[in-house]
Every structure is written in structure tokens, then in C-alpha cells.
Image 1 (cartoon, rainbow, N blue to C red):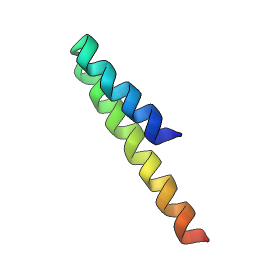
Image 2: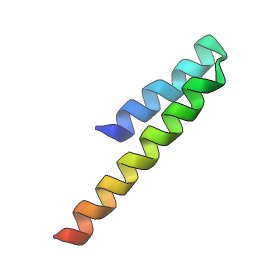
Image 3: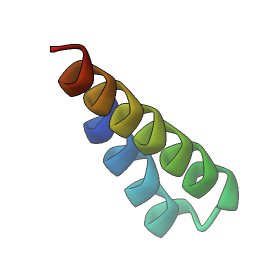
Length: 43
């Protein structure tokens, strides 16, 4: 879920040209990867 949100937020950068959306998207995608890796390791 966070990976998809990161993709959408980052793509908003192309429309608005605001760096804040890019940073927020990268942070969201990073959190999504962390959650996915944690889920794999807990199993």
C-alpha cells in the first residue's frame, strides 16, 4: 500500500513541479519497502 502511495505522490511531482511531493513520495516508498522486508523476515 505504501509503495503504491509513494508512486502516486511522486508522479504528482510531474504535474505540479514541487519538490515536496517528490520527497514525500520517496519517504512513503521507503517506508513501504521497510514494511515489506519486515513482513518477509518475521515470517
